[in-house]
Length: 327
Image 1 (cartoon, rainbow, N blue to C red):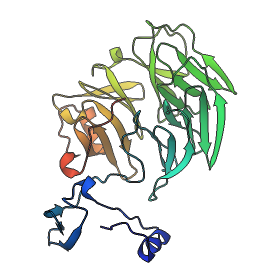
Image 2 (image 1 turned 180 degrees about the vertical axis):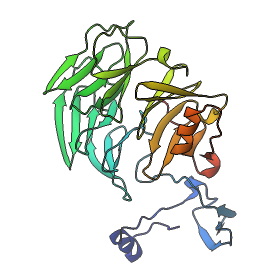
Image 3 (image 1 turned 90 degrees about the vertical axis):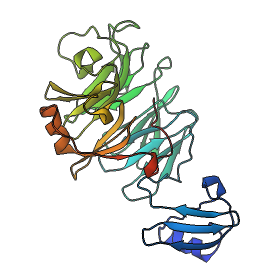
Image 4 (image 1 turned 120 degrees about the horizontal axis):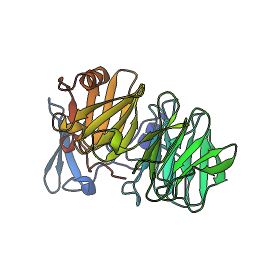
């Protein structure tokens, strides 16, 4: 634990790439003034302050101090193929390279509506009237359909940028030109989200079954195809697309679906985020908190519903300081 103060120690830590975190009364200490500190054999750190005795213990979940909390419109997140994580809050886009601290890379006048990866380790950011392409320290600005607020975006393997705009329709950008998918209406095929499948094909979530015919350049998703209730999350995995709802989790792979029921696997209900690592872990975040599973165990349970699915759950006792973001 470090108390921030100007001087050699702080400059040396910054030069070495170390990160200094400060804890004060606003973070839970009984006072800003501390007089004694020691660590016990269990790893707990004790502080004697002017107003009491405080204890801190190692937490599995650590709040990222470099990104301001309480963004007015929440946060948008995505990852690129190089392993970087990108985050957009109310007015800033951050890039987090593997093992590095967050770095602000762009300022925005408006809050991001959607954030998605491009084909070259950069991202697309949709704003009120424009779309930004942020890559390698450069920001390019393009117009977008002014009447369409993006609620999800995805760039497919063919380079098409898809944008779901609810009752305003489904748009895609190709060759520098925006196009609107025909035949949709506020009552037929309301496009609410977009994602890219492992094979590079886009998947578009519709709130109602869309009137679609013929060979499509995207995979249409709607609740009638899956027995998980209203679809809350469209979650790309390493080898499949996952979908979450209040009644469970579904997997779409090679055109076939499999489902896990929330009554048997309650921690898989209402999952809002999923990532699968090269080491073979699946991490989810949802109403149950942050959950870690082996990807092989998850696939085994999906192939044989009812099979045991070991997991590790991280919640408020492990350092989470908020419920999962709903958007």
